Image (cartoon, rainbow, N blue to C red):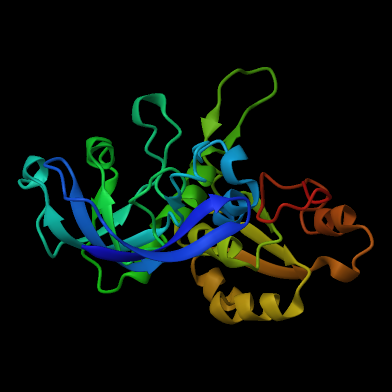
Length: 272
């Protein structure tokens, strides 16, 4: 099977190439990629090259296929996995394999598997880790976004609260609390906003900040405050670009009490 891919050879050395995939092994799966969404982690991999902890040291000789948020169709299934998967199955993938403690991941570490490709070979460890996920939805793009959304859900679940004098951790965002989503009118922020409004455990008050007015207007057109109120959430958008003291301004919304949960969705040192 011939495939067309984008491969990483070194720092900022990305090449579109076409080559023949090797014969499929009994414990592998051949797949056709339909959707691969863009992630800034791919930019980080391209920026760092072999210095990236997930990228092999020998990519100049054995380049990897970049892209880790992908979905598509299964084309051929090796004998080992034929009872679980079939040609024609739609799939998504969880790239955080953690196979036997290894940092190897799709889109960072594999010569024949990554999202920026027409066809790929999915190796045995992906199925062993139950990271090849069957998908029954209508489109492919939502499936390729399952990885970034899982990061958002994971962050909400990993958030915890304690009571002074107690060592008990109460996991998850505070139910009916106050939440701030900083720099959150971009893709990841919008995902977090959607999840905060529509998940079972949600805040009572939610503020979204950004410095781009067009992005804020776009966010508000999708997630309108009056619609959020129907879900029991008071939603406020704030353009923080012209606010001199953002901390004081935000505290006014909570009568000086502050926020129970704060998430930052841009690598801006001043926000963190």
